[in-house]
Structure formats: structure tokens, C-alpha cells
Amino acid sequence: MTLQTALLQGTQLLEEAAIPVPHLTAEVLLSHALQQDRAYLYAHSSDELTERAWIHYGRYLHERLKGKPTQYITGRQEFYGREFRVTRDVLIPRPETEHLVEAAIARVRPGDALLDVGTGSGAIAITLALETDARVSASDVSSSALCVASSNARRLGAALNFIVGDLATCFASRSLDLLVSNPPYVPRADQAGLQREVRDWEPEVALFGGPTGLEIYERLIADARRVLRPAGWLLVELGYNSLEPVRAMLASNWSGIDIKHDLAGFPRVLAARFTP
Image 1 (tube, one colour):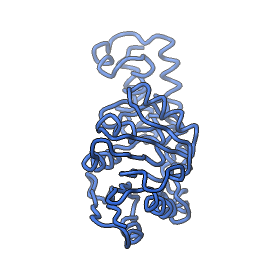
Image 2 (cartoon, rainbow, N blue to C red):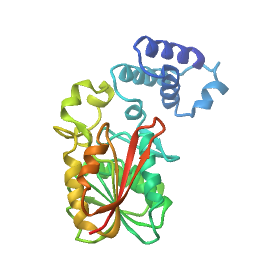
Image 3 (cartoon, helix red, strand yellow):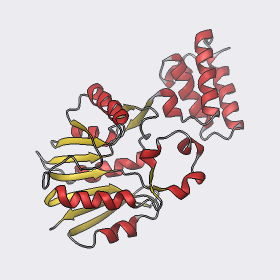
Image 4 (cartoon, helix red, strand yellow):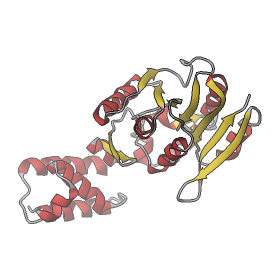
């Protein structure tokens, strides 16, 4: 079987199973089986697929047909132009979260103390450590997630501190200039309606924010009031329909509230300045 035939057959299987972007998915999985980039598939389309590569490709296709996200099969996801390793211990970084990074970069001053709460793969914290002159720390309640994040930091050459802890509880009062977070914000009631790739594979602790999906925001804002210095910034990614409830939580001690929309026009990032 040639690479071209394998690619066509894989695409057909994925398409019949209603897997999104079936051709691209087949390309990524076949490339992963060959340990080559996607351009290799077309430069060598008439090459015979080795038995070893065929076994791996077949297994990857089977896993994807069962709902396993492509990123967990390949163990990687691009974020802000860099490749991050991902496992089932961490949420898969989304392109929309790059808006949160951009909003933070716009507010960081050299030497600022910055904390990324719920860092997961470390995509936000590592990117900010590499793109700014801030002193970056990252916390997560999951020690398994922090193992993934610290591995990504070493591989990408980022210098930052990792702390196992709940939100910002490990930090002293008035010790931070920026607190950044993409918190769990899916209401538990929405679990059944999620895509199976999300519901059955991504870590629940990184997805669900409680019965309403707002519980972590409430705790995070309370933490931010304690740890931020005057005029420090809180930046959070917003979930669906969470803008107004979160804005209401900032009725006192906050100013300069700014909302950044994503490419689909949805409010994606909220930034607020602490003014005690």
C-alpha cells in the first residue's frame, strides 16, 4: 500500500464516522505513524507503507474513531507558534486562549511578578515567560499536570516556577502584579452535551467550574483581591454566557475593565485593574 492510498483510505474511514476535518486528521495521523512532517506524505506519495507504519497508523485511526482527540494520540499541540506536549492529564490548549496571552503581554512591565493559575500544560505561563520580561510562576491543583508543564518548560527553554496548589492560596498578600487564568468554567449540568472528545477524554478538574460554572471565578477574584498589588491586573478567559456574571463580581475594588472578543465575536477575555 502506498502512502497516497493509505491517506485516502484513512480519510474515507474518518469521513464515514463524521470525524471533523477527516483529510487533515488522516494526514496528521499518518505523519505521526511515519515520524515525518505532513509535507513528506506528498513528496513520497508513491512510497510503500512499511508494515510497522501501517500497524501504528491503523491503531491511531482506531483511537480517533473511538473519540480520542488527535492531540492526545500525537501527544502535541501548537500554541502561540510553539509545540507543546499534551497528555490526558492536561486540557488541550485552544487557539482562543492566545487572546488571553496577548492581553497579558500588553499589560506586563519588565520585572512584574505574574502568576498563571491552573496552568495545565503550561501553555500560557511558558509563553508569557518567553515573550515578556516578567517573573512568571504557575500553579495547578494537579501534580500530574505540573509534570507535563515543567517538561514543556525545560524543552522550550523557559524559566519559571511551578507550584502545586489551589488557585493562588500559596502566595502572600500583595505579592503579584498580574494574575492570569483560564479557569474551569463549564457548568456541570452541561456535561452530557459536550463533544465526546471533550467529555470523555479531557480532565474534569480542568473543565468543570461547579454547578453553574461560575464558582471558580468567584474564588479566583477573592484570591486576586488578596494577592494583587494596587493597580495590578486580573486577566481571565471567559466561558459561554459568563461575561455579565463575572463583571458583576467586580463591582467593587476594580476599574479599567476591558473585554477582548475572539475571532467569532464572542467575549473571550476580561481584564480588570485592582483598585483597593
